[in-house]
Image (cartoon, rainbow over all chains, first blue to last red; front, side):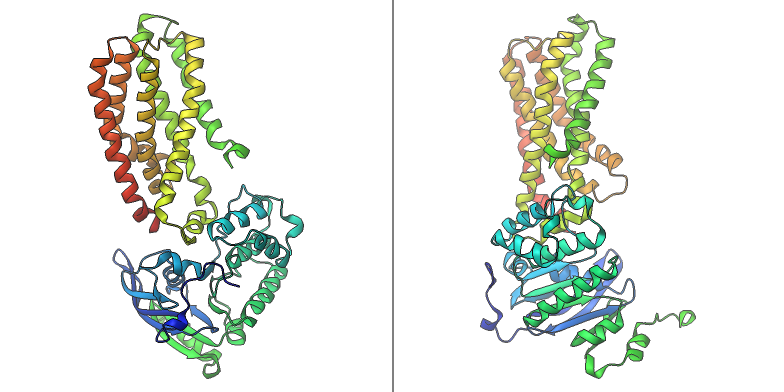
Length: 248
Length: 209
């Protein structure tokens, strides 16, 4: 069930569920992204790979509406992120290595706060806390949680409004084995529901195993956009290697 | 959250008490010097303890990148400014509400006859100061030396508020007459309107990048 969803993309069949058009982002003289275009269809699991500083996090921030592109445009479900910020934010769940939770609130209070913000039913907080295995810890403050536990609450936060698209920016960073497996199983469940996932990560094996499509960024440019079945690990490695001859 | 940790209020109150005690040692209770310095003492407490509160007011939003969490919500981003501004106004006003009676009891600080008007002037000062303070504390929160950066940004800009506020308060506290204070109150109100409007309009752009 969707809560206060944006207009469905079916009404605009010419667009994918996520579409980036000639996206550029500069920070002063430094170019983080340059002329990036792609289209992602509903239900696709897309892995975004790239070396540190390639522009992965910037791309996720732009897709999430956390930053404005210097030029180009992003469409979520056929709606411009710039012109329809509220509607597009409702369609997207975001998770990164930041947890986006108040340290001084309990896990339950944090989720109830976000439920109010997204106009999602309060009962959803309870359901998700059970799903991430933290129901017994619901009355503990986030400050007292381990990194893995906090990240699980953060996943619950990202799923609270039942988004159609999940943007994950290196979500496995700092997780222990248990938390990582728990997270992966929740992600599998999300994918089984034919939702769209865009995931940035460094784990090539996981990307090749789970993703349907791989985007590779290099120095802010999209250098590869191919289905996983037409891509080899060595090929990815070669693309990811730094361009400086001394490092090759 | 503040009720749980009292991080902001405790810091502001402790600082104000220390400053008040120092002034208590300098001036004789009920003396003429205290009458002259009274308005200045009040505004020094407002400005410096307010600065402590403002510097901490965004700590919670910048732990765990919570500000980005708020920006991800499908709400109008311009509502974040009034929410934080009103919060900061409440903290500073609450602190003054405790401190002023304490100064009167301990040091016989003369408030004059126009106490309601004086309260209104202080409230106007708090409103303008916390509006600019909320804007600048958001900017300073991005910096590493945020506690140093905030007063560097805030104090020069708020000079018109302080000037008009101190002048109006001094005239009211020394019973020089409300009429003479009115022109300063008008200036204070006008500066408030400019600062609050500008902060409101600029805020969305500042939190976005």
